[in-house]
Image 1: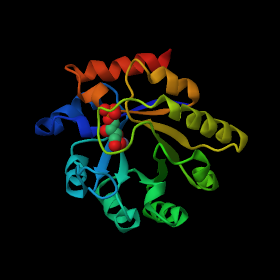
Image 2: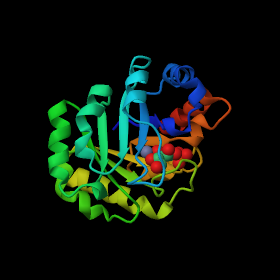
Image 3: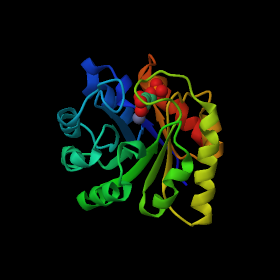
Amino acid sequence: MAIYLSPSMLSIDFAKIGEQLAIIEQAGTPYIHLDVMDGVFVPNISFGIPVIKGIRKASNMVFDAHLMIVEPEKYVEEFRKAGADIINFHMEATEDPKKVIDLIHSTGAKAGITIKPNTPVEAVKPYLADLEMVLVMTVEPGFGGQKFMENQVPKICQLALWKEEMNLGYDIQVDGGITQDNVRIVLDAGANVIVAGSAVFGKEDIAKAAKDFFEIFKE
Ligand code: DX5
Ligand code: ZN
């Protein structure tokens, strides 16, 4: 399965959004990870629909939205209209994940479920056949630049095993504290979409930071 980098825009220089998106796109980055935070589901507020709509005009990358918001069903259509190609919502943010998945699919977007570190991976099992992506958090959601939680790796292994056993095609995305130094751990566990915020946009040379990941992906 192909491996993709999805740099998190949370760590971008917001005074240079267009410029920095163009740099990583030209470096060959396929996805951009868009962390939407509402100050309720997580104790932080980031950016939302108007920003995504604005950058959509400036980028052809796959827009990978990670909604850290309560009642995601209320906003799915708006995020899709703004340009999201993949919509990840949190398992913990809804009573009825199937309803949210169906709503996402009805807009033409791909659907992903995200699980926080304290949510067991079994919670997502009933929905796997309906999903294009499962997102395993390796930090508590809310902030960039936190330390990678290696104790979440068994969830990735389990998702990779289920994928094979059930012959499913979902992507396994990992998000939080990933660097060029620890990404091999999650790749070996079976992850194929790698989010990195500070390890890309936090670096002096962001094109090189992305390319360093591509080199590791080839190993
Ligand atoms: C955290 C976000 C992450 C974060 C990743 O809530 O979901 O996407 O921006 O940033 P790093 O890679 O710096 O941990
Ligand atoms: Zn994220």
